[in-house]
Image (tube, rainbow, N blue to C red; front, side, top):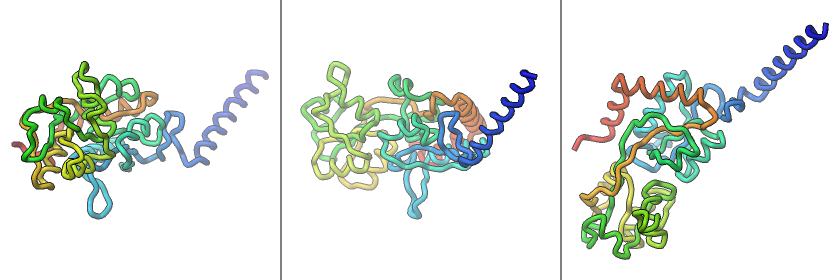
Length: 263
């Protein structure tokens, strides 16, 4: 009799939990996420062309957006872009406000402490933008008391603001801006002497602003991947497997080649 009662109570508790989840709109709170069922929320900073940018009608486009859209389709979900400052992208996924982070996000040992990362889907190169008449000819010239502009929270900022002993130039020689476009505007107005940023956005900024050029010497190479909440192994496996399939069938290459033309 006691065993029967325990079984009845267990069933009642399970039904109560199901009812509670339904009443709350089907939130995936048990997985550490708060996104609505049927949607895949992507945290990004849509000011990083050609990986993510806004369209004239208020939508979003770019390499990361299209890859995420294809991943969402494979998971039978609808992609929702959560646009925010770059510095908030990782914490948004950590807190469960977003499901994945795709923002030209470089894999670093420090970031691996906070998120799990998918397979690499693109390689980025940090470069230096300077005025065409600048006396900065190589990366080494940045060490000569130059002021460098970077997007806050990016690897470019992390590298440049680190101490000279660690290969950087020190925080006193770096100014952080909320996005790359603002950093470039600071360069045009001579508030900084150079901007360190990913090569593909750099090309877009130089194309759109006369009088700027990119140094031929690269600053550093890095790998881009998708960041996922460490507490959601099921989502990690699903996203990573979907990405692998898209790489194997050529979809990722097709998307990248659409935005980045061969030199």
